[in-house]
Every structure is written in C-alpha cells, then in structure tokens.
Amino acid sequence: MLPEDELRFLNSCGPLIPDRLHHLHQLGWSLSTLGKSLDPPRPKSTVYNWIKSVETPHTFSEPTPTPPPKFVVRPLSPKVPPSLIPELQRLSLLAQKCRARTPPASPYKKANDRLTELVTDLYLKGVPVDTIAKATGVSARAMFRRVNRGLQK
View 1 (cartoon, one colour):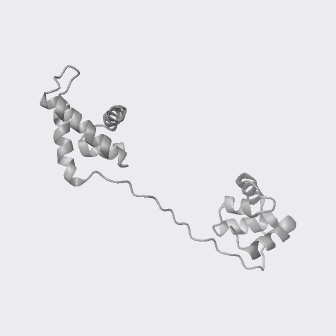
View 2 (cartoon, one colour):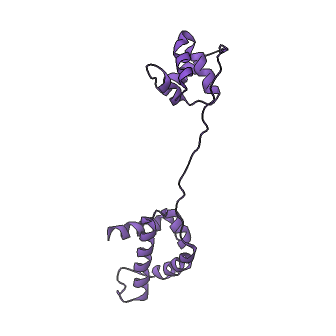
View 3 (spheres, one colour):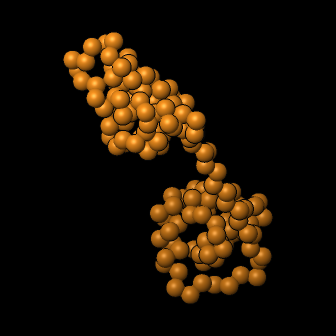
C-alpha cells in the first residue's frame, strides 16, 4: 500500500489523479497497489488505461514515495541425493528389461519394483519428476508414468 500522506494527496488530486498515477507507476509502484490505494479501489486495467491516456504528465511539487523493494523468494526444490544417483541408474538399466510376464523372483522385476519405490519416495519428498528423470537417465514422460504407478499402489 501507498503511505498515508500519499493516499491523502492522491485522493485530493481530483482530475489530476491519472497524472499522479503515471508518475508513481514510472517510479516502480505496481498497478495493483495503485488501484487498491484509490477510494474506491479500481482494477489494474482501469489504472493502466488512465496511465496510458496521460499525454504530457503534470509535474507535482509534492514528494513522491519510493516503492518498497521487490523480493521474490522461491523455495528451492529438493534434489536427488548424489549418493542415490548411481543406484537409480543401475536399477534403471535392469528395470528396462522387465516385462509384464517377468517372474516376481527375477532380478529385473525386483529392480523394477525397487526403482518405482525409490522414485515415488523422492517425488513424495518434493523432488520434481524431471529432476528424477535426469538423474535416472530416462525421459520425463517415462518417469512420470513410473511415479504415477508407484502412487497408485
């Protein structure tokens, strides 16, 4: 939100509101913040159209507040533990030979089940499917199918 003194000044501008909004927007204030600051609040599209309609902006002697800095904090996605990557790649090579009629006691079937179990566990811990796929050496689509199969069990 805009500071209180700026809100009072902005709402007292009358027909010069678009000029003041233009000035504030050029300094970095977002359209949504400007729209919410008006009384009554206006949508971003209205504020944008008002700003676009200003041909020669009026200069104001009133000091203009600077917007707060924008910090975008993205949580880091967990990664595949490096110690697990060789195991995933080994199991992946064995699991490629597993078919529907492979006996349950076969090393291929056991590798397939273990791989599905490991990747499903990684996915449930928040590791993205494409990251697991790269670590395993398979396509993201194949890994997506495997994870879905593991989640359905």
